[in-house]
Length: 283
Image 1 (tube, rainbow, N blue to C red):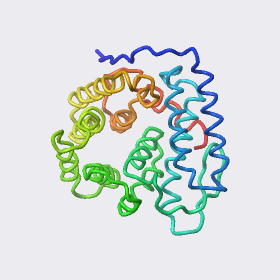
Image 2: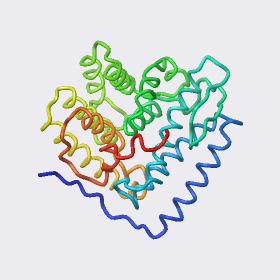
Image 3: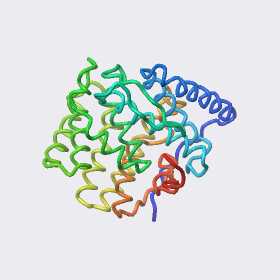
């Protein structure tokens, strides 16, 4: 029997108007990227908010506009690093049904470990193998160049995901380093780390051990912690809480590896999990 993690009901009366505004703002930023490619950071943030917001009214991601929004967010997330890492003056990226020529940006304020993992998760959800590989080839030095202060476990987690995808050695050691780095007594924000950042690591641990039952328990725990975090009063209405992106991405890896997913939740849009849209339209 499947475990169900319910998403609390949220008001939807103004949702369609809000989504329409997000759509317009996203498209405006996308249309300006060839003139100013450093708007990729803002475009990616708003595009992801749009994708997540569409899951308020379409929690299964069952209709095309929802899938299209997720694809666009994924495309921008990948373009961030294509433009930042290229050694050429320009790079061609497909975004929102059009090939766009973007200028090389080099390190920017938005080129961070956080934006890398978000881009990786989005590519995993959309099953974009080539984009995942390209992300895994981004030099780690680029993620350290913009002056932002990130704790070392972020880099260890990125190294873990890279090793998994590329089949590199030392996967276990890298995962241990990432997990050890999330010790609540050693981090600046223990609530966020324990409820949002550590749970996907535990899911990943169960995935690579091929522990089907343990994976589903870890997934259920991750969604429950996600629910608790985003149900806190000051966060209740934020779009980021509508979909559990990191658990969804790791669940997609597990689903593709043949692990039966025995957890159901609006936090885990089933059409994305079961890759219903993949291959239907150019991405």
